Length: 377
Image (cartoon, rainbow, N blue to C red; front, side, top):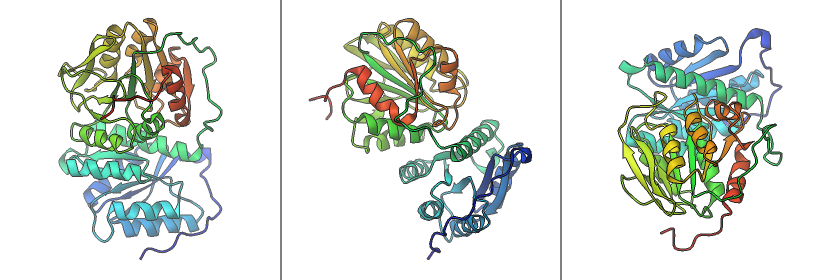
């Protein structure tokens, strides 16, 4: 049995002069993977790998040791399949010992790996990382994603999120249009699944317009994400199918490696799935979804831009806003990476910049939502 949680010890944080933002533990039963991840992270000036362990039991012991020393670990990269104690067994024990620890689940690019990763997010993991094969571990996009998540999650631990009761709005926010939107369009990337769980749960069943969603995610993961969003008990979510009607009170998710476009007219909107070239190095990408939505809905679109790396969605948001639509961005304090939401905020395209917990209620207010009867099976 794992040892009981330890009482909190005085926390010693490295000073700014030490240049360490993130104290990281890597837990993986493969010495090759542990070494590869450590090299990627240790090459960054603001990351310190303080431990490398081979299973969940050793991870628990290390977290307890660091707590006793007053130097708690900020982020743990936790493999799922390991001997002695696997990642799913270790996760709740790690969080009992240190509720502020940010855990990133490293899952294989399989359906089973995706399902377990989504389960872990709902059980308290902060994020997930699709782990490539040993031969592909040096892939540059994987390295960038790993570093972004580690740095972002460590920052969130060091600086707690702003209270949802005090919304953070841009100083020169745009006035809200008087007309309710015909469509809710959501974009997200790094840190997105956990943010989506919070947003979708807050929206419940009361969104009286169709919802389209693009999350940067491998094709293996998107159907599993849709299942887990549906399990939250609010709106049903599924991968969008080419040509299907977009109905109020339902979430249509862009399939992995496909763009989701919106066609038709208000009241008769439909999905279009394409294999057009990637945009912003992404497929699916948020920009084509938003550009098409702006046209199909005559601008009456509500954009919600959640945490994500890069600037995908900025050009599409500009098209929506210039056509008369509304844009809300997640704030920096609650974002793992303030890339995508930060891009539209800095470009002056936002009507509001809000902490994640405050976004759902604002969306419902803008949509003038009322419970939907007959729209949800």
